[in-house]
Length: 555
Image (cartoon, rainbow, N blue to C red; front, side, top):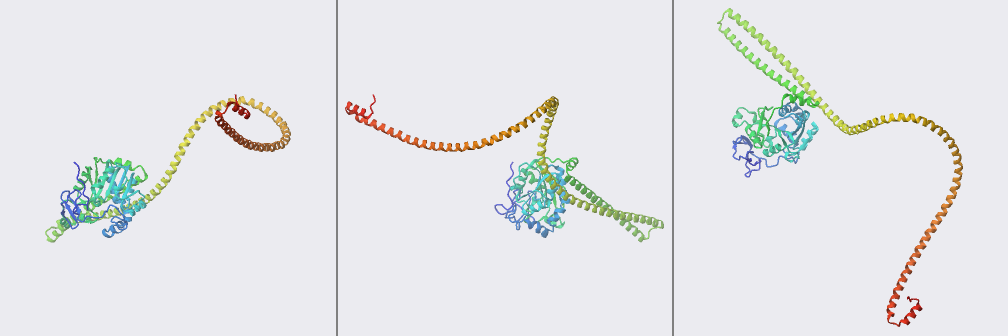
């Protein structure tokens, strides 16, 4: 059964908001949002009429540069984008990476929609993924390229020329709630994913069925996600799962969100979601210097989380012990006030009080030790962060050197292959040469006698050369005398050639005159024939005499 066509926000026929699921009978929820009872989604009342999926003016459009430079800081108190580029790496990005690695290990191709400063793209690339980011603002695209040296795409996903079924991971971190046409955009994402590719999504979680009054009464932090103009849809777990299932991503897993008080975090795919083993992750992260850096960062995060968990346990235990001590102290004070106790009971109570005081001292010492441990771990964590930043700078330098070396290696590879071929030919020639050397050794021995004979002949030739030089001197005189004679003959030859030219010119003139005579003779013969025809009727004898007299008679 085909799904219903999507009715994008702001494009309903009656200008009434319509839920992504097609329901236009929405219930009032707050001043800014309506509730869809069919799928449990909150829908923005005042739908945007402009196209917010493209940034045409980076200075004024909703998701232009001022969104990152002014709006997020002034309206919501978030840190500026440069600060978030630093702080998101060990927190949000590392949390997201853990979940990606749980279902996909590198290598593979990844794309993040709404990648902002590009830190998560950079972390994916360090891990071993061929990752690319996408943003709407030219300014933030350039910021990400400059800050993390990552490849970035500009504009909506629907405008990108990406090969279908080519990606392993597509991430939408705090993006889904901004999409005017979620069905269309997610369908495009699934077209780009391989059959076993995964969507990784973080988005605000509407606690379905909860009324606005209840949220206000318990000060639910989800109220922070009411952001008109930006958050067009606020999904519940039910509606998020239904949205993905409608598009064919029937396998969905909800993971712990880093901001679980108002977010949900999920992974979806068309295929079942097999978990990657710890061994596979360790093997994938041990292949390159950058991935080993990520492995160390994950280890530090595990240690920090373990410290936080131990501190929470210690704090809970300390609070429980203090409660017991306070309770027992109150009981002792009550007994003392009532005076209903004996000396023996007083001694027991004093001993118990001393014991409790000793336990309280131990608790305080333990708390002080825990505080020192926390301070030392915090200093260690800060040191590791500094080392991480230095390692990242070193990684960038190494990658730059590696790029230059790769070009050198590529150029040298062809040269090396050519040298190998020449070496093989040289080795073949060497073998052939050794065979020839053996044969030549015999030849040298036989040639030694011949060489001596040639030396004798050389001496005789030298004597002949001396005689030849004397003969040559005589011939030189003869040649000089013959040179003058030759020059004279050349002069005569030039004169003869000039005479030949003149003769040829006269011959050409004579030939021309002869041609004219031949033409005249032909004309005369033609005239004679005409006269013969005219005289056919004249007396033959008279004609004969006349012809004889003219010399034209032919018997």
